[in-house]
Amino acid sequence: MTRIAFIGLGNMGTPMAGNLVKAGYTVAGYDLVPANLERAVARGVTAAASAATAADGADAVITMLPAGKDTIAVYEMKDVLAAAAGGAVLVDCSTIDVASARRAHELAALAGRLSLDCPVSGGVAGAEAATLTLMAGGSAEAFEKARPVLEKMSRKLVHCGEPGAGQAAKICNNMILGISMLGVCEGFNLADKLGLSRQALFDVASTSSGQCWAMTSYCPVPGPVPASPANHGYKPGFSAALMLKDLGLAQEAARASGVATPMGAEAAQLYQLFVAAGNSGADFSGIIELLRGKTRPA
Image (tube, rainbow, N blue to C red; front, top):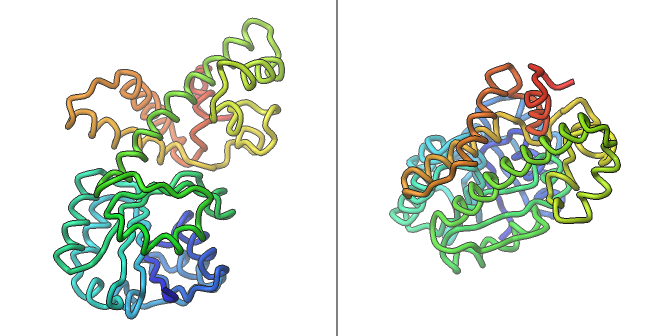
């Protein structure tokens, strides 16, 4: 497997494609936004005039797109699926709803193609450093075929199960993240009011029962974690708009499954308020300012 098509070259897709170039693959890329394609070309990706042109002769076709409808649109393009090399595997790294992911698998199967739904976690920093966690749904055959390529973009690669299982893992994980970030924010806000220093709370909670990723890697207040967005004006990172999208997908899945997720629902409502206040492009950890009664992150 040497030729890769990469369709969708936004903030995540471009560094992921660039890492495949660094790993020695020939990568043809396509994006509807010319500026995105230009940034990918600067990383060694070959620009393609269309999705079908990018897929021509490719051993793997990777999509990284905004929504389920976008993934389905590509998988419904018969010229794209037909253009790939014999035995090619289709890998959708987008974060989309489970129903759309399963439909994409069906379309791939109708075209005689192996496929994976394989969303990612780790944000832009993880995409740049090739330290993403990738969670895959699909057949064992498809997973093993795509593994050498996926390993070049990730630090952790997990086969979660059958079609749709990767998306299920992603939305469950990000619902947990959204809820836990709100808890960490509330803890620091209370500490401020009680006169407890932020560093003291961090030193205690990061090594005891309050420990979580939102605390130790993405602390929402300036100081304790130098690399966190809080120390960089809440520049994402992982934007509030993307967190809201993922929380919405989780609520959609919860309703369809008849599962009660009251904390997930509350988190979705709070992030909706934060985004509606004009913070869609801020890091999701900036919601600490909303909980303080402020409109925007400092």
